[in-house]
Image (cartoon, rainbow, N blue to C red; front, side, top):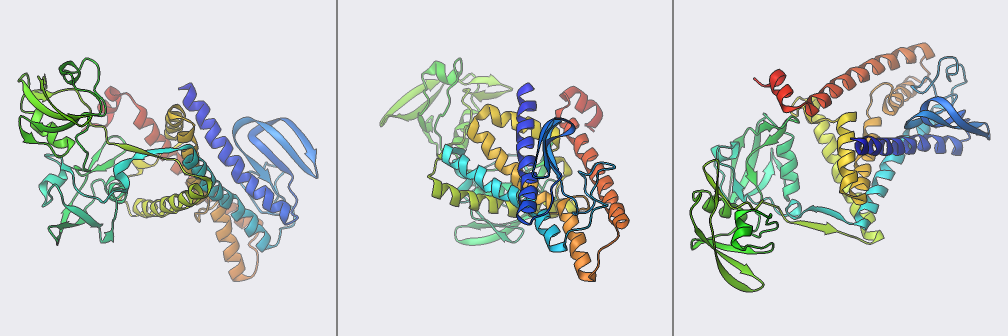
Amino acid sequence: MLLSVLAFIVVIGVLVVIHEAGHFGMARILGAPVEVFSVGFGRRIWGVARGGTDYRLSLVPLGGYVRIPGLGPDESDVVGEGSGAAELLPRWKRALILVAGPATNLVAAVGFTAVAFMLGVETPAFREEPPVVGWIDPGSPAAAVDLAVGDLVVAVDGKPVTMWQQLETSIVTAAEHQVELEVERGGARHRVTMVPEAVTRYGFGYSGIQPPVEPVLVQVPAGSAARSAGLEPGDRVLAVDGEKVDQFYDLIRLISPHPNQEIALTVERGGRRLEIAVVPRDVGGEGKIGVPLVPPTRIDRLGPVAALTAATRECHRMTVETFRIIGRLLTRKTSLNQVSGPIGIAQISGEAARSGLESLIWFMGLISLQLGIFNLLPIPILDGGHLTIIGFESAIRRDLSFKVKERILEVGFYALILLMVVVLFNDVVKVLPNSVYNFFFSP
């Protein structure tokens, strides 16, 4: 818990300060005055005045803010100290200062992601493979339509997909909404329609389609039936009782009907074939040898130039996916449960920190990208809202009154508070103990 809180403070603190540094840097370049550059919010605990700017550390270490007279009403203004009375800067200067914050986050996102690639990013190997159906979960939505192992998914809702990552994202964000898959089988194509079911408290979509996984034992836990029989990590299972095994799901399928019955596994180890007898244990009426399905992963460790190229490509992909998901949220095709607030971000920050420095840096790149995109949305009180007002003022060739702008920002503020309440409620629901969650939310 403490690690999650500390990681959250570091992630949000650093990224918000980067955002505000973008505003500050552009204001300095344009010669605009900056009254305050604060790291943190609340009461000033230390600072130094230089060049007309009070550089300060404030009590609450969650990000920071800048105060720029002439920028217009802003959420960082303090009553009695706001910039409303100051003469407004030219609209083009205000626009450049406003856009510099989100732009700095976007640049930082590429930088963090590039550093993560240089340190080494571990990802599931199948995510960039063609979306070939490796297994279909019995009783799942996919099992009820014309899909078969070996089918290649070529499009989702009319949009081409070329790798598993694209198919996975399309399904995860479409819980309880109809999706159409275009599938290629034996050189012919056909379409199937299904409705992914919502799973977990996050409301993720689940279709039952799984990628191919080779029948290699990655982990053989101590005390398992597999370890007792002499199986070792790295063993490739070729057959069960003489029946060929092409992938890990075949292993599960062929072992499941034999609880407490001896079976023979043909395995390949170090170039040799071995016959190993094992007795699966009875787990809920199914035979299990205690070997988990662990999809293979790969580590991408790149040089500086290749890392920057890969980071730019990855940030572009995530930006496209972000706007796609925003569109689905607005059309209610994706559940708001999938949006994480402060609690969710704190949890993920802690998990990333526990996973290693490269995971934390990758996560910071992701959040920096989302922060930049979110701030560019045309929502009053955000930078994008201010930019929208400036665009309107440019169109009518005059500035709106300060009071009108304040009213617009008040509406945006209350709308943002309402959104935060909903997101926080979802966050709290996700971390409730199962017994409490089931009591209140299970049908």
